[in-house]
Image (cartoon, rainbow, N blue to C red; front, side, top):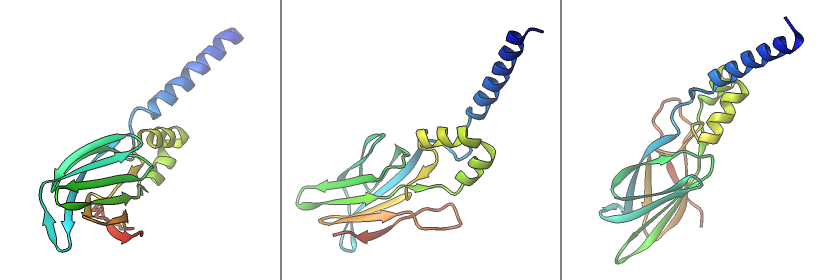
Length: 156
């Protein structure tokens, strides 16, 4: 076997291994369903038009309602508007999913890069409550279960 054939065989084996590790994400899908509620004090506001925006795109939902968005390591900005009320704006922090540790172990650097670039490594709270007339921030709480409902903090 010539040196050139031996090198080509090794390159083919390495390329196959790289492609095989990048075929699926260990940490999950690159999108997630988000539910949005608009609130004024203690009451729920129906019919507010909410815009969800991150570096992967822009989505719209009528609150209360749900929509699928693309995951990202960037914050999600949620702006809700309704006639007769001041707009509400919520900055929602992206959080690295706990399953990324498994991806590092089993998917290697290629799996980490793929999941980072696709957004599959990150998550937002599954329920976002926007207070009309206020601006605030929200983060995914540190929990051991899979339920991720965020908590709002005032960032004024």
